[in-house]
Image 1 (cartoon, one colour):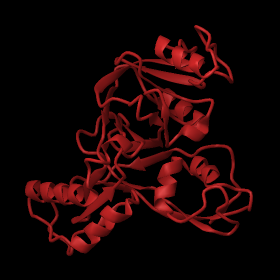
Image 2 (cartoon, one colour; image 1 turned 45 degrees about the vertical axis):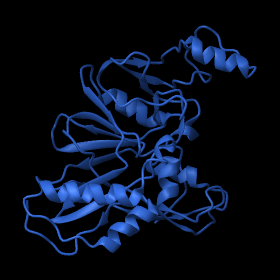
Image 3 (cartoon, one colour; image 1 turned 30 degrees about the vertical axis):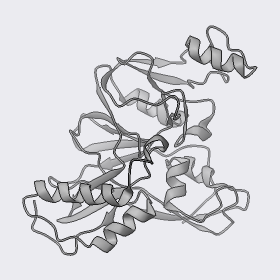
Image 4 (cartoon, one colour; image 1 turned 135 degrees about the vertical axis):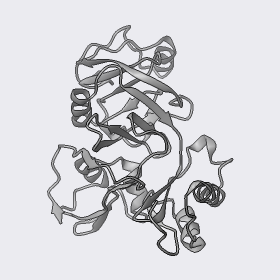
Length: 298
């Protein structure tokens, strides 16, 4: 399909898979409608992060993709490992999953996370408060950084277009860390913050109306996810965060993840290692089937 890009992001609410399965959503294709459109326009319109869309579409010029060019929208995901409760944010994926209380659906959003020198931590915490039109009190470290760049900050930044928290903020029990909107939405799906997690403003408004204080939040860093769909094994491989790339070999990480999944499976899958290697090399972030044949249902 083609799209005349609108300004509204489209969050994804996906039905949870049946027991034993881990894959949700679907991949679609869209066509660039206008020569002036950028890949970031489509990332925001369809609910993806910039780097996420780049990984799924290698070789496309993000600023001039070209009118009529077909672009893959990577809307299929392996759910993160661990309990499907509350909020799970995967740093390597730069994506947030919120398992809704109905136990039947998950809402997922792209996120911007902390820079290499201001990392978003891996923690388990809870939501404490949801704030509309938040003011921002920059910590002393950030004020010093801005002052050194000739951009001094006030002690308190009131709500408005200059406030980097955007229109909503979700406060966490972990001191100093928020999930919030942004006055620079291009940073969603990138590493640009001082450790907080940024959503598109339309997404954060929806999320703020869904989330409740007391909801558990789990922040993980899993570049290789393994899951099952219809009795077949799939893997989803993301590039490791910059500070970990020297220690993470994608082929080894994929082999380790597959081997672990087979050890805990009731019936191991026969693996197509060529497909597994391709997933490790491509780092597309797309679920790829790696079992050579269907296995009995779990």
